[in-house]
Each structure stands twice: as C-alpha cells, then as structure tokens.
Length: 214
Ligand code: SAH
Ligand code: MG
Image 1 (cartoon, rainbow, N blue to C red):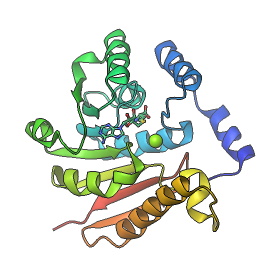
Image 2 (cartoon, rainbow, N blue to C red):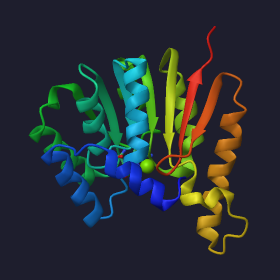
Image 3 (cartoon, protein in one colour):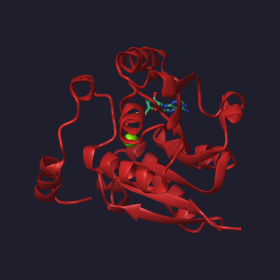
C-alpha cells in the first residue's frame, strides 16, 4: 500500500477511461460497490497484457467493471465471470450490453463454489482473478487452480485488506476474524508448493501467483 500522496500521484497519471467505464466508476462509488482500485487494476491489466491472456476466469463480477476493463485492455480475450448477487449481475448484464465487448464476456450466475461444472467447459484459463468473499479465498483458489493452463497465473485482490493484515490489535471481532482468514490465506499461498507468489502493494494488495513449470 502506497502512501496517499503517491497513490494520488499515480492515479492522476492514469489515462481517463471511456465514458461507460467512468459512469460505472461513479455508480460504484455512489452505491458502495467494491470495484477494484485503480492502481491495482492497472497493475493487473499490465500483467495480463504481458502474459497475452486469451481466456480469463473472474470470481466476483459485481457490476462488470473489471470484466469490461480486461475486455477493453486485451483484444480478443474471452472472459468468464461468476456473480452470486442477482441484482449486481443484472447491472453487469446491462453495462456489458452497452459496451462493445458483450460477445467476449460470459456471465455465470451463482456461488462460485457451486458452479464449477458450468465453468469447466470453458477451461483451461490463462488467468484466474479472485475478487469475491475474502473468507473463501483458499477454497476458490483450490477449486479453480485445477482449470488453469500450464504456466497460468492466479491474481487475488484485497490481500492487504486496507493494511489491516499488518495491524496488531483489531478491536472489532468480525473484522479480526476476516483479517485472520486473509493472513492465513497469504501464508498458505506464499508457501504453496505448486505456485510462486508475489504480493504487490498496489490498490488493496494484489497477489500474483504463477504456476510452477513441470
Ligand atoms: N471484480 C469486481 C468487484 C467484485 S466485488 C470489479 O473489480 O469490478 C465482489 C463481488 O463478489 C460481489 O459482487 C459479491 O456479490 C461477489 N461474491 C462474493 N462471494 C461470491 C461467491 N462465493 N460466488 C460468487 N460471487 C461472489
Ligand atoms: Mg477487490
């Protein structure tokens, strides 16, 4: 996590998004939809460009913002994205239909832990992007790592959770439990025998895990 001044400096340098994406950013802010932070998503998009991802699985569509950012950044990429909140999924559908990329984004409705069968026909994926319920990260990772291409990568958002992962005393029990889940996940991930992982201190903390070669 960068200090605020540097964060703002970088954000100011990032080129404007198109009008639909800006509208979505405003909607998200107004309605407290936790879309990915700007510096985090820019870092992720750059990795996906370098990897030349062709097929990406996203867990946690929300209103479709990150899915549309990925579709606009990478020509020809196909995105399969899962969302369990029906209202958000409807909004995502509408926004995606208004974009130029609706033919490259497949929306799957349901709990990511229950729809693997619907996802599997689209596998293998070059990248999996985990951005859903923080308490379930390990389960998402284990379930969908199986659908990853050799040398594919998994990107996980919010692994620094507003800096709380490094804060010693967290008074609110619910928050403390969630922080323990995330730090548990981070420890598990950093020691995973099949993946090399780096945690980037951008946005809300982005973990990039690359499958080890055979
Ligand atoms: N990736 C989006 C933001 C996702 S916010 C973006 O950056 O634009 C997280 C979303 O994950 C929420 O909309 C929530 O409803 C969804 N979610 C949480 N747990 C889920 C699960 N188990 N299965 C499917 N969706 C889930
Ligand atoms: Mg997030």
